Image 1 (cartoon, rainbow, N blue to C red):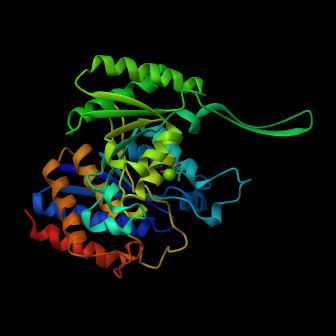
Image 2 (cartoon, rainbow, N blue to C red):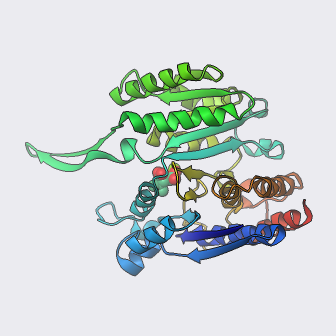
Length: 357
Ligand code: IPM
Ligand code: MG
């Protein structure tokens, strides 16, 4: 098949990890007789430096016209002034909104060989296989109004958590669809319905969707309880669906189960159009340019791209197997206590991918 892929390396370690994921995709293309074209564009701090904005209309248009977008990471100390009008993160949020990718899929698995890399006790990690679905284009990140005001000489800052019913329904329905294809067929809807009105609507819609899908078990957890369960009994969780910022926080926490933030991929998808694929980690400015970042989160994001945007399930699985095999064989970057650099780790994965079926 032919596919147009826009690559947004971004800032910090972004260019280092996306370069390795592109290599992996090139191997997949060659092995499977596919033709992938890669177009690199600026987004994030690098775009602010070049164009004064984090995401230009041209780049968004290129992304919209593609089959899929592969992203590294954005941000860094250079653009971190809290009073700045333009920030790298605006590019990422604008891209998510502009592509209409309302569901962010963050699978969390624990490779048996990495159990000791997690600070969570090994007996809690057996059988962990969670899919967190984070609502991505609404909620606290996007609600209006947000801003600053001075009232009676007192400075205020405010954000709004606003959801339209259809925004909740479409992501919750997706959670049920994806749960049906899994072994345990269970959805945990995470909210703060004891305090927030938006969460009460969320719970109401989740409950109604549960009634319409009796073959899937539904339960509700308050987000504070959910954050505890993630480390006390992670194996009890299957599919989690939750508000944008709750999902942001819970998936950083969940990455601890997998041994390192550097391991976790994500896929952001909408009703139609290209999906957006990015590791869940940030731009890690402290290690940027050193060639030591873990490329696995981005390589696994490329696997999700093959699966969700290109429909190449066998190819996606072959990349995941190559990663698993490399980890089983003891290949480790520094974040997992190993000595391999970014490229050397990808070499190990590529070698297994070449050799695999
Ligand atoms: C993530 C990141 C982003 C987010 C930042 C960089 C804006 O933390 O993808 O999880 O909060 O969504
Ligand atoms: Mg985050």
